[in-house]
Length: 295
Image (cartoon, rainbow, N blue to C red):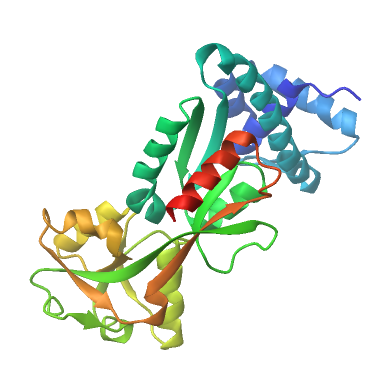
């Protein structure tokens, strides 16, 4: 059986884009040619891979399995191309790193800079995401390395120590709680919150802890980053819970206050996750070793 890598690439693109037309536009190929390639794939496997809906196309169960396998195959083929071509350019490795915003805001900029100074032949592609999505990306071979805040995540990955951080409460300077040195979660729940995205580790922890108190946080607005959260807090839209290291750069420039969050769950463990440390490409393994030394 001969499977054309281009057909696999087009199949992955269709699933990611949701329509054949969008996939054809992204890959600069006629939509009819894309449809023909997918039909040939389905004939090859003797099974339906995509299901047409009024909103586009979605993968069947067989299609979902092919998506995961195809990503791995295409990544391996891409690695072959990159590693051979990069001898000429001096770049001899490519690492896909997916990390949550806690790690990106607090630790990764300096650590990646040091790594790339030591290994100029390695290219690091960094993508920000929530921890739940990161572990899925690593498991599905859409990322080589993930950095997550530990929670109830997949058990089919390897987790390695990285850093710890601490959550704090931030308020506007004129807020009724601004004069407090420390505070429990229950004392904050009568006030409006500026929240982080659904699925983020901080958001999930806030909901779990509030649920244990039979309370629900009053989320007035939700944002996608710590800097946006700090700006919304300064504007008086609510209080927020953030990692101390991530909020620290904003204390001088913004009219916000920090309060110690007196909760056992305020101390958090960040972990490196991989499918298999032994099976990692050399460049990715070097990056993992570097990050572990910094943790």
